[in-house]
Amino acid sequence: MKKYLFLIAFSITTITIYAQESKYYLGISYGKSFPIGDFASDDFSNSDAGFSKIGNKLDIYAGNVLSENLTFTLVFRYQNFDTDIDALLNTLETNNPETNFTGISEAWKTYSFLAGIAYKLTIGEKFSLYPRLGLGPMLVTNPQFSITSTNENTNTDVDRSSENGLGLGYELGIGLKRDLGKHFCLMPTFTFSSGFVTIPHVETTIDNTVTTSNSKPKIITFNLGLSLAYKF
Image 1: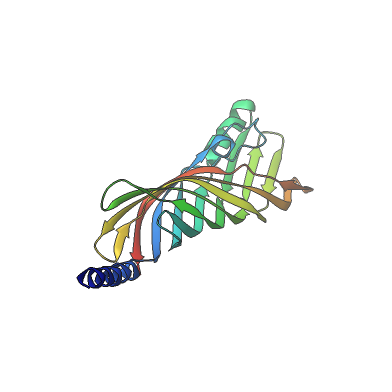
Image 2: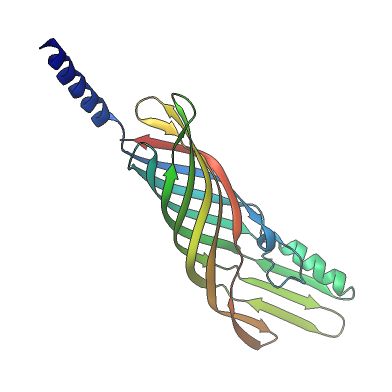
């Protein structure tokens, strides 16, 4: 009889502890995005050069613990990258030593909504690693820029429009989790993100002559930042 009472008491205790475990979390992360490859290139001869500087990123994320090791994740990410207009102007002046160039440029902006899976690797009592991947829609706004060139005989104006393009974004990386008591935890992530995006109807105007084309930027970034989540 005592044996059965012990099993009943143990089962109730186990169920209670399991029910009290946090199954959901909601958090925010702010940090840096580092452009990679063509997106960071300032080579004027590279048609895919993005001339992007190190940018800022803001994540609002959530998770649902599906099992002991699997977590369903959602991430909304905003990224902003200033463009290195000085590098572009210097390249133009190097290639055209008798011409002066001035210009202004806006920033790249990306918006991603990614759903994915994270796999838990327990390192210690309060510390875990989470290899993760995500996939979802991605909206990109290319920077508008304007360049004016002058020499003794002529002036040339070049303008490029800012447009929006929708595509498929993805991320791959690893997350960390460090519990800070019952409800709070640190959850930084270190991820590579990119996407397949076409920006239609980008207009390039050179002295009143307009050319319209579709842009397919190669946006690849490495992202990291400070993060705090609430478990419930």
